[in-house]
Structure formats: C-alpha cells, structure tokens
Length: 428
Image 1 (cartoon, rainbow, N blue to C red):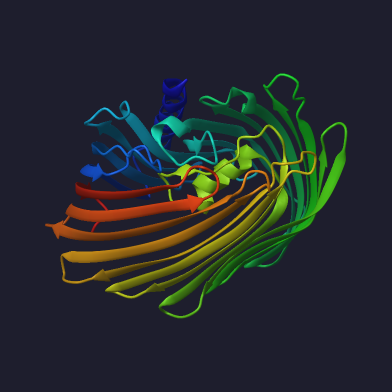
Image 2: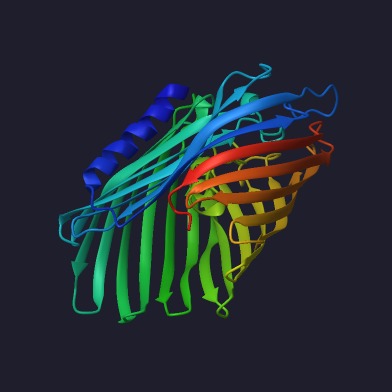
C-alpha cells in the first residue's frame, strides 16, 4: 500500500509535467542531504532511545501557464535511515499536483488534482514512523462557463474524488460532487456569485453508508493592488441517513499589504468537512509542506470551525513572521469525538553577512480532546545557521527541542542536532 500510494502520486505528477511541455513559467528545486542526532527517537516519557539519522531529499516548485494547459507541482520530502535501527528506512514528505486543460478555450476545461502526504494514525500519540501513514487523494472533473453577457456568467463544475489511506482503509472514500454558480462581475477586480453545491460521500468501511452534503452561499471575490479577499456566507446541510444537520457556512481568506514591509493574512472557516477535507487543506493551505498532518481519521463528517492569522515583516536583511490559529471539530451525530486546539508562534530570520543567515523559531500548541480523553500542549524551539557557499550551495547547522506535556499518556522531551548540505536553484 505504501508503494502504491507513493507511486500513484509520482506517476501522476510526472505525467502532468510531461503534459506541460518544457516551457515552464517558473521552476525552483533543490536537493539536500543531512545527518542528525536525537536523544529520544521514539518520543517517549521514559526509557528514551537515542539514534543518528541520515536523510536525502529535496523540494520542487514547478509552475506553467499557457493558452491551453496550466499546471503546478509542489513537493517536499526526504528518505531517512536510522543508523542504530530504531526504525526501518522511512519517507516523510508531501506534494500537490494540479493540472488544468482547456478543451474548448476557457469555456470548457478539465481539472486533475492530486494530494499526497502523511497523517497521524493516532492523533493522541506523537509523530513517529510507527504512528504515521501515507494518504493520496485524487480528484478530476470538468468546468464549464456559459457567458450571459459582458459581466455575467454561469459556471458549472463536476468532480469525482477518491481517497486512499495506507493503514486506515475504513476511511477510504469516493466523492461525487457538482456545483453551479451565477457570477456577476461588477468591476474588473470585484465579482459576486450565488453558489449551490451538492455531494455524496461513500466510505469503504463496512456498515458506513456515507452521507450527502449540500451548500448554498454567496461569494465575494475582490483583488486590488494591496489586498485580495474571498468571502463566502451561507448555510450547509448534512444528511447522514438517520439525521439531518445544518450549520452557518463562512469562509474568509484575506491578504492585506499593510505597508511596504508589513503584510497580514487572515482566514476563517465554519463548514461541514471530513478527514479528506482537513488533509487537503492542511497540505495545500494550512501548513508547510513536508510535515505530518494532525487529522482525526473518522469515517464521519464534522463541523469544522477554524481561524488563522499571520503577520509578516519583510526587509532586505530581516524577516519576521507571527502566526496563530484556533479551531474546533464538532461531530453532530457522535458523542466523545469532539476536540479543540489553538497555537501561536514566531519566526525571525536575520542575514548576518552576505553569506550567513540565522533563523529562530518558537511555537506553542494546545489541544483539548473530549473530556474523557484529556489534553496536551507542545512547545517547539529551533535555531539554525545557514551559510551560502557560492551561489547555490548551502551548509546548515540546526538545533531543535520539542516538549509535550499533558494527561494523554504521551508526554515526551526530544532534542535534535543536525547538519545539512543543500543545493538550491532558487537561491540568490
């Protein structure tokens, strides 16, 4: 299953790259080899096991825009070897492949999307090779645009989605969905739309019939010189067979350039969602690529309430990032599965010389599960020096410390030191 999931993503990504032709609008890639030492490879509270870990990996960000074909491939990953055999060889990484093909100009297009990565098999336990599994979510379908005038159009879309989990096969599912939108462009930078969508989710797990979901909402899209805004407001319906639930639907994504140095990103979501939605959002928009997603593997839908905030300061020699989020998952038809979380952090980067750069990072996360399960909190610290040798070769030295405490029986304290050598084509 592991090889099938990874191979399906790689094969789909390669075929997409070949379809895009060699005239790429933008390509950034790099390779890295690293060696590090951890004092708690298994992340346990007692009887810690130390190990030395070697890794080889890299990243890619490939974008192509054309008259008939648009596409993007993003990925980060590394293969790891545990010298003291605490774990078998392991791969950690994630990637997103997107392909848009114009069948009849802009009027009829076909989309292919694939998301690959890892999730925690047990959301209480820490991320280790024994507690993560690969996930691949594939979707495809057409989009059709019918222009009713210079400023009005109808957009009809259909999608088929299939998800595959390496170990949690009961969460594997197929989704068929359709959307119709009446869009009115009030100016070149502003559009309003009335949207209706319906989908059916069918799980592979025995005794789980899945559910139907509908949404009705109004959307505002605005793009200006200093900000972009997408805002949805409406209502969502969930029909699980025995019970029908509804919730207010809110989705907001706002990016604002406050000054030449400061920018703000704000997001807010209230909607019905499932594990697939959380995974795709986490890989594609919620977190950095390459990590393990904290997704509850349930074959049921939930109401997801989430808010994110990021404040960035960018100058030629200094970069600052303040970030935080808060969220809650509520299962309307099941007791004992609800949980909430919040986190905050700060990252500071300073170019000390023309070739030497230092980065400090701190983050705190607090998770509160159902009353019977308890809660935990995790503090993460890291310090890194990055020395550029020549134009594209980098030597890095880094120290990390992670501490988790709480009453879920999975407390641990881990310190890691590592050195890396990387080649980055996007380096200046």
